[in-house]
Length: 578
Image 1: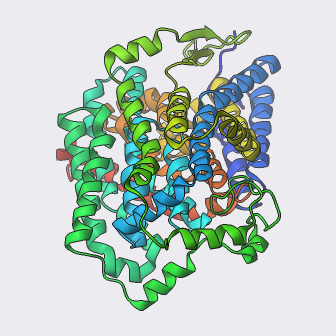
Image 2: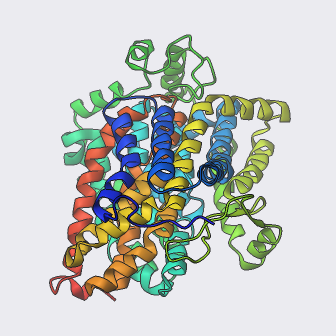
């Protein structure tokens, strides 16, 4: 049995924390500074974590390697199983031609790029996060934005920023219920507290998205739609999490804000000038010239293709097809429009049905739970660790439900089994580096957790005393940046937040919720999400470019969240604590 210690290096917590932070520092430096490929950055950070666990933390080599293998397996199931299947469904819509129909349909609802980004990336993405999570919103909304003619890089960045504020409550309140389980605090109180932190940030995300898509001119013309979106989403998320159900917070907020955006854009249309029209045209899918900047070339097999086209399809042909699809000679038949929307309606229906108690119980009845063979770990306190427990929920997992949605999609879109199998094979081939990246990243997270490195980092930060209220959300931010999941971050640091709060005389509910709330803005720089976004738009290998574009916004938002939590710990905003 391996039992980690908090201060293995010279009995110094500070020095031990410095060593424990090396894997994270290595990951960020390799990705953001050295600009190496994401899979190399993940494996490099994993090597540093293994070295630190074996040499400094005296973790047996076999236990360290077994912990890494469990993390890599967890990456394959359920994560790769989930986002790979989501992209497979997208491929079938491209093959059948219904993605072009969807693109034209959205263009008729509103031809304003800012409004399209709000409806698809923010509102619809929040609905998907509330139902599925695990990278599904990023995988689906990026390709939907591509369908409307967004450039690959812009589609990826918009989807990543939009997939922030829903993360605290999705899927179906799992991050909050997990936090309640590891902290022994009431889930209702934690959800209510997070519902008084995250909506504050949600007020500004739509404005940020509009600015990213249209710049200052876009903000001048569409600010009122963004404000309506942010206010409606924040209010719905607050009311639902505090007075209805934590599990429904993202679903209700996404639906309400989508309706508000549609109504506002119709009653008070965005103002556009000639410069904005020119900018929109310049944001069309890339031509062959973009290949020199790192995008797939005109003859290179491009996986999903930079504009969502089939493998190996020339970039120029994809661009021309996209422009043609946006300007059809005649309107699409209503039945074809319905079929274009059907895959996403099926996804929502299946995930909604899966949460009916009787259905959920039936799906979970065949779940297999077992201890990872040969892995024997204790916590710092000496109690058996739950890390070696592997839950193989093969029937109720998000990926399996997406497979069911894919089979129904095949029937609706009249895709033959052979074409569907070829599409799935192409998806796996195009995702090969993304799969390696996610496996390395989750192996890293498991090694740091099992060896005690994450506990060392958290305990060291908790030594700040009363100032820990400012650092508390940063800890959640780091947890999500590392693991890609608010649920995983809450599992890692939730109990630590409560212990630190009690030592510092702060409210445990406030700081535990701050872990979940701070984590939401770390999702846009999570290597897991960066990899999914890059793979979905055919930019595999350019995760570093995405990271550099996202880091500044993520840092700014976590500073705002830290300030908010810090003020909530003082009489200034203590009235916000339930």
